[in-house]
Image (cartoon, rainbow, N blue to C red; front, side, top):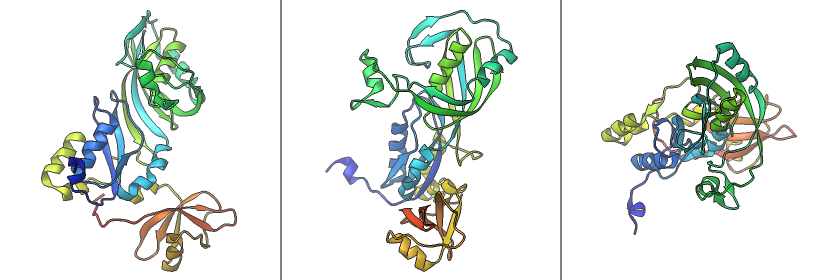
Length: 313
């Protein structure tokens, strides 16, 4: 029996809003945190590159059923562009491809360029990305010197603001849709300014609905682990936090039972369309997520079988 098989696990539900440190892969962070929590099931909601830091939600137990919604949510970043230098990877980890002189830039000029990127954009994913081509990760092919055609993707930049402007470094804040490559955005900004650029630093600051919340540092997780599992559990946000912006539908025990067996139910005053959070009336509890059918009934999509783990959030 392997060490992994012998390691004790438990059922724990919730979301850890981890402040991922730079220099670690998202998967390495996930595996370490999962081991500290002795969690039977855990997953993260969208990788950050090793160079990047910031918000990496880690979902435990039943919260993994909400992972795809967090993956598809809008995200916010702070980032720095290093002007005048392009690299093989589009970020500071790559080899230098070209150096160009950086013109004297004024703030209004740079802000005008940034405004051109707000709205719907077509982006070609970088070769150094985790996307797959014929079963292989693009970054693996790139390391072998291969370049393959990547179909462009449509992304949306909701807002972008210039925070600081130095001689050859721009620091910006951006709110964007899922699938946006900030490395590609930095390269495109450099090209628009006529001098090239690469991504020097990146921090993810928010994911809808976690927009104004404190993050748990890597050191805080390890400090809590020294105190025991109860201290770790106190760091978790409940499942409800992931759907706080959703329209809600409240059901009685009878309807809740039908939903748990996969049957759609009619609920008075339910929304006319879209996804909804399903709450049991008494005692109040999030029991799942559903979708409004064409005939107005509420269909269960993901129902929760929650653990009794306490969360202080």
